[in-house]
Picture 1 (cartoon, rainbow, N blue to C red):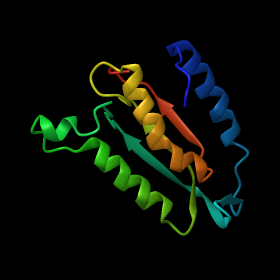
Picture 2 (spheres, rainbow, N blue to C red):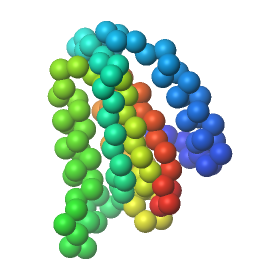
Picture 3 (cartoon, rainbow, N blue to C red):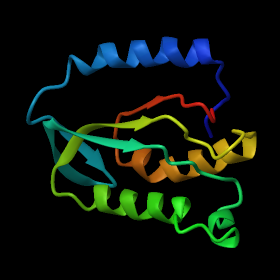
Length: 130
């Protein structure tokens, strides 16, 4: 569970976290669920506008051709299946759908659990829905 942050707190933490990126080096090893993965410091993952909703299947109910929750799950599986671990993940804005309710962010935090458990550094920015 991630505690709620003000915009100012999120910016301050983002700056602090990005300062730590300088220390990453090629060939660093991380352990995820007992499996050693080499880190490719030149490889970063960028996800943009996940628009996660507390009602996981809302997009299907409203007839949208975009299945944001399902797509995030598929993207996570793809990242975790890579032989080498990326140096980190940037998630660019609009983490939540529409109004950014606490329940939206709770579901988003659940989606981040496997990524966090694998040892990825995750950096997020805010969008206009956040």
